[in-house]
Length: 480
Image (cartoon, rainbow, N blue to C red; front, side, top):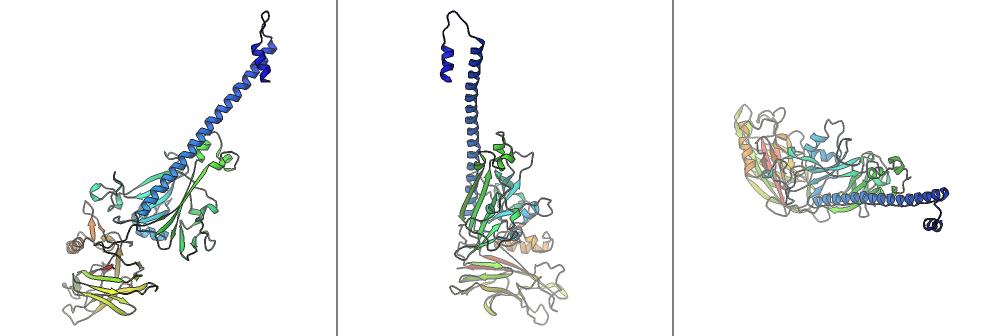
């Protein structure tokens, strides 16, 4: 056919013009050539757009996974319990969860040295008028970074490590998948122990449990994590899609989802990687810290070490004469009914040894606190242990209590608390915001701080209602 077409174009007729039939054939052939060339050009341009959209999406997902991985590496631990995240990230809960019609689901919560509350990652849906593409974005709630990559400190502006109220929720990457099938919602190589739409706990070949966050299958979108029980190792799962970009090329979303487009297999991109929280746990003076946890109101010792017991403050009003106060308090570690060590008197302290045999389960230790003064009456001893509900509150680097006002149920601007605040400042246990309105705890990883409200026993003044938890403050520091 092409040869005939060329011959027609080259035909020489010195005495005759082109016939109508010849012109029509030539025009038809020219149109076919143009259509073939045009289709090829359109295909090349479309393939180029597809490659660009897919490549950009994959690049963004990889960069986002690397950014999250780097912050995990700078963390000490990763939360495994979604309910606990609300306790250790109270500002996030207040801003994005409590009372909200569309509460945000925390997915990754990191404990980072020097940062008062957990840094939280979550998935947020994209509004119709938003600049972000796709159905959802990954957002990060935490302190801002300086140009050198370090977290902003209190002197570097409002959005710093000590001021969660000033933290923002920043979008990290868009084009996230919101609809995953059941298999895509599973941890890689970690199938759940039981099939339950509200619980996902898997056990690896070493017998360790893994917790998926979010736990509920219905809440799992294109970003979820699986955290090992020791809170150190996490599996990141990020699933992105260029669905909207493909749709812009002239294909309907339904056609793509139903596989009618030959580009459908290129639409999604999955990143799955293991990351270890490797920031070293250190004491307030750089000491090594034995492995321990605070479970409920009991310290669980997992390694042998030392405990320093300090009575930071004691000011206990006496019955009938509130101006007469006691400052004589005894603190002791108690393990299985036997005392491990004591510290008596305000600002006094002692160091006691404790032993946890290798291979043994964690040892539960209670911190017993006794008021042993006569308070100008007959001598009396009142014992309070940390498992006595309503009489003791404690805070640590893992605690739900992040501010002094969240523990002491009273107006801290009252002059009665000037001494308490100054004592805590002297020990570097609290920091105040620039306007002096809030006092945040600044505890090292090895410190546990107890606040005690003694009850009535005929010698002490009646317990406040509600309890103020300001009668005594005890500091426990654990070291190797």
